[in-house]
Length: 308
Length: 253
Image 1 (cartoon, rainbow over the protein chains, first blue to last red):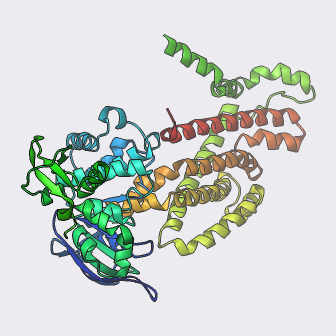
Image 2: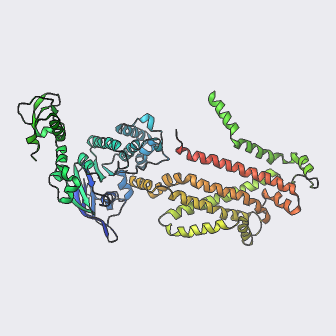
Image 3: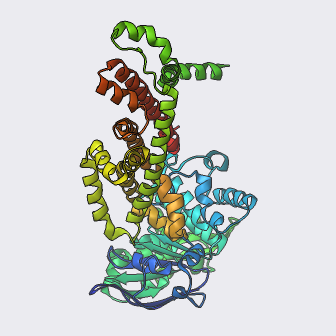
């Protein structure tokens, strides 16, 4: 669990982060969202004390981070940055082994951990571990960056626009990968991004920052249905907000036990936007719904989809 | 089989072994060239410099250069690293100015200034060579360390590398090729400058050169110059190999 209490960072008269308080539960995926200069990276960098706090407190499992020794604190959390920051003079295996080596793990355990992580990040261990960073593509490099951050098995992962420098396809691949890893490992993740759609797609909770202040903190659903103000409304989607809301929900939530209409069924795990799309294409307002085994279990109607 | 052939080819192509052989030849076989020098400069007796052997001269010379370069390297890297730390940052303009002034001093002037302080012999030469050698190493250390991308430093600190680990494991290895280039410049200058050390009484390969110049024995000047020149060339080639080895991580497959 990580707790921000009235956190403030002043650079002279300017407040880069102003009186921010919120709390992220253990194992949650929290996105810090805002335009550039909103203070989201500064807030993140106060967690691992790369930026000193001016006022307030950040507590990690109840422990004030300023009471911990910075180097020891940082080894307890993974850190992934946009520039990736792999050490160019070390092989991929050596890069991933950085923190375990600093922690003094025995050689055999480090080698085992490196293999595990390469596998987790879907990189070919035999082909990549002996290579140098410049020999890998940008997407592969950031996979190594994530693996390196996970190496010491930290409870918390700090990610600062990690996929910002990658092309859209690679970025989407890595987002899916991070969501999978989040589910598989149960790490708490703080993820800085300016892309609200990425945040809606990935996060359990979203903190929206504007000019250093927290304007809204809540689940994607809350932010979409009850935006705190016009800024948040515009920021999360303006006129397409309704569609983003549909994208948050699954067909399963709106299934009714009615005789199914004819036509191709939609999976109960599909997003409501997919159901809407299929309705438009097949010129109908109800679709049969199939369960995981492909059996028809009921139907979904447009009227049920548009109620909040 | 093909690998072996390849390596033989490479030895044949690299100039280092050839220059190395030439150097060793002149170092030990100069007296054998007596008849040749006697024909070229009949008035010089003996035709080949007959003080210390060229090997002994080279040994004095090499020890002087090695000792002063080691001292210069230690001071230069130490000073450069200090200047790039938070605590030493304010000294950096002063160190830069000092470096620039130092570089504009001709080596012979540094030598001349050292004599009144230390008297004649190897000591003033050692001091002058050390002082003159510090500057390129310190400058290159500063350039190399500050050349490490800020983002890389940030990632390293964020992962929990202590400032000392950051220096030892990231900054210095990445700056190593630049620092080595500074050491190379420094050593090359010192090999040349050490010959001038003979004017203040140090025994070096400059001894036959200076002696030859003073007594009009041009053959001795040529003999000393050949050995010093080859020594410099071979040393420079060794540095080039070291440099290539240091940059190994940057090779592409």
